[in-house]
Image (cartoon, chains in turn cyan, orange):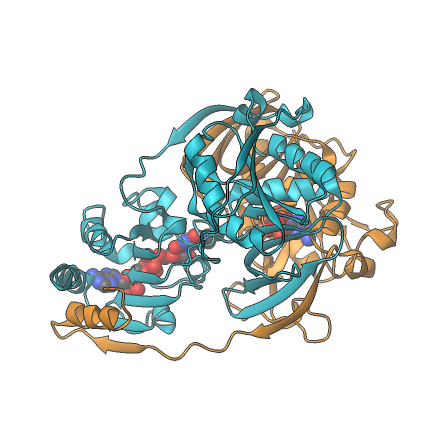
Amino acid sequence: MSDVIVLAEHFDSEVKKVTLELVTAARSLGSPVVLWLGAGCTDSVVETMGSFGASQVLVADSDAVRNHPVAPGAEIVAELIGSMSPAAVLVASSADGKEIAARAAIKSGSGIITDAVEIAADGTVTQSVFGGSTIVHSKVTHGTPIITVRPNAIPATQAPTTATKTDITPAVSEAAQKVTITNRAVVEKGARPELAEAEIVVSGGRGVGGAEGFGVIEQLADSLNGAVGASRAATDAGWYPHQFQVGQTGKTVSPQLYIANGISGAIQHRAGMQTSKVVVVVNKDPEAPIFELADYGVVGDLFSVVPQLTQEISSRK
Amino acid sequence: MKIAVCVKQVPDTWAEKKLRSDDSRLDREAADGVLNELDEYAVEQALQITEALGGEVVIVTMGPERAAETLRKAISMGADAGIHLVDDHLAGSDAIATSAALAKALEGRGFDLILFGSESTDARMSVIPAMIAERLDLPQVTFAQKVDVSGTTLTAERVTDYGYDVLTTELPAVVSVVEKINEPRYPSFKGIMAAKKKPVETLTVGDLGLEASVVGAAAAWSAVADFAARPPKAAGVVVTDEGNGGTKIAEYLTSQKFI
Ligand SMILES: Cc1cc2nc3c(=O)[nH]c(=O)nc-3n(C[C@H](O)[C@H](O)[C@H](O)COP(=O)(O)OP(=O)(O)OC[C@H]3O[C@@H](n4cnc5c(N)ncnc54)[C@H](O)[C@@H]3O)c2cc1C
Ligand SMILES: Nc1ncnc2c1ncn2[C@@H]1O[C@H](COP(=O)(O)O)[C@@H](O)[C@H]1O
């Protein structure tokens, strides 16, 4: 069975859920081999990868990988494509993931498909485009298929095996080290699930009225174990940190449940949440375009509807 | 400082986008073409840099005849010149071929900075800037929410999942910007009039020194097998709050097994 390279998405030694989704998807194409760039690949990480079906974990950790974005990763992926002739390379549809995929595609003479939501055993990729209005099936026709996969699209399932861990030390060229990371600003993530990976997202917009208003949004999110999101109007006003912006220029989310509170539904916001499975809307303007997406909507003031909802959820649990 | 800004003509943001049934390509005729709004931030950034440090801004686009309007629109913000890659052989190019053509057009012209928007609103791939950096062997600083140029050193904040990274590199470099970086200006009447007289170079595949076989639909390294409109979502239920809106939602969420 041929290998399928999976580029791990992680933050320090925390594996992101999408990595397990990628390993799951890789199983239908061949034997998943995880590539871990940088530090943090502990034995327990390797064990987790194995429990989802990875046969090997290759760790490429060096100063070159840690201190320079994208280009070193692309070189390593391209080198592995050359030496392993994998059936495919699967990467998360994150900023780094897409760019590593893009550069590796050029280096290895391979076609690339971004934002897959499904991958069939014959390599046919399903994409959901134009805000989810159109379903496209396509296939890479040249070189090694390089496919970026949307978080939360392919459910991770276990397939226990034992993964072996191998340190690889690929050479990284000078050219790939021209950009240096001099500082890393990490915003406190807190206890809530990560936005892009959350099953439930509760968002607030301009209707929340201020930073204090996000208290009711956070309480609702916590009652459902969900993540908090925000519209650009709310992040630009400084009511909520930019990292939580949902939309074209923020995060793309695809949760089971999206609750939009005080958000009008501008096209740029929809672009980031339109593929949510169930959408609930609270807005006091019955004409707000966000109602077009609603499976269930309430026309009303979020400051009375949302706390009542939170209360109800707590009492029903 | 010589800066290129790559801009793309995309279907109007609010227009319904559809693929054509005969060749599975985006039906660009069906909607007005507009300047990809994220590219406006790249043009603005270029203008701010040259206003501070002196220099020249050249707008570069690849697209059919009518993309010339978009090129003029970008120039009318205050740029100095344009380059338009226009050739029927380019039609149907995928990202790989688009980056090959743009890279050839940008190469050897002495640009200190090549600016991009962070994504096009139609393709939404966010791969062209990285591919150009790869092809031209230039440092890439993408998803920048802040850019400073001092001498030949560029410092930027790259937006990440966890916050941002501060990056430094030496010029020349490829940079893509996010919408947080600035507030794009509207073209002034003077700018619009001046743009009509700014030089625009048009380039064919031959002018780029590329074989026609490496661009266009036939050279695409991925192919659409089929596509379909997603069945329309059943219309949802919308109720007016009469003091029990929260309870109503809770009942709905219970029926959907979220609670
Ligand atoms: C290049 C570009 C990129 C962009 N990217 C993004 C993006 O990534 N994400 C994003 O979200 N936006 C993005 N935008 C901005 C987008 O166009 C909208 O401006 C933004 O989404 C509006 O946010 P909003 O819905 O919170 O505010 P508004 O449009 O002002 O809507 C507020 C809503 O709250 C309702 N409301 C007010 N008070 C209450 C109350 N007490 N109870 C209930 N409802 C109430 C109002 O009826 C209204 O519908 C982008 C714009 C541009 C140009
Ligand atoms: N045909 C094109 N002509 C010029 N620039 C382009 C073209 N396509 C994409 N770009 C640039 O690349 C960026 C990212 O596009 P994409 O990778 O398609 O999401 C855009 O914001 C533009 O700056």
